[in-house]
Image (cartoon, rainbow, N blue to C red; front, side):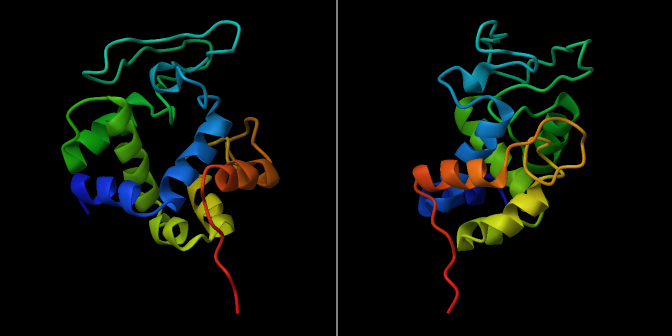
Length: 161
């Protein structure tokens, strides 16, 4: 897969952007400033960056993390995505495509497209520590909250016959 494939997945199936919204719920970046949030932001004290030409690579020493943007991508992950796929910036559109690349990397893109939310969440919980089932040791969203966000943003669930 390549960048164009990730963009196509975003544009062609409503489950993909709905799943991204559900990820953002748990990452605390669902608001209007989500794409330029640094790790450690709170509603009362947002920590923001303004240069989207590259990952900001700002270390939050208290959290020992460089997570940034709507999907709280850490700098080493960003570097790997740049090497693997050729991403050239950290703009909102690129952040969305990078998130799809990470979903693909967790072998969950087919599940997202099919509406198999439970499996997609399970597979992606190793990437996003806020997803239900994550073993990272930080706060996680409930599956019900993730599902509600996903459905409210146009996602559909697979039907079994």
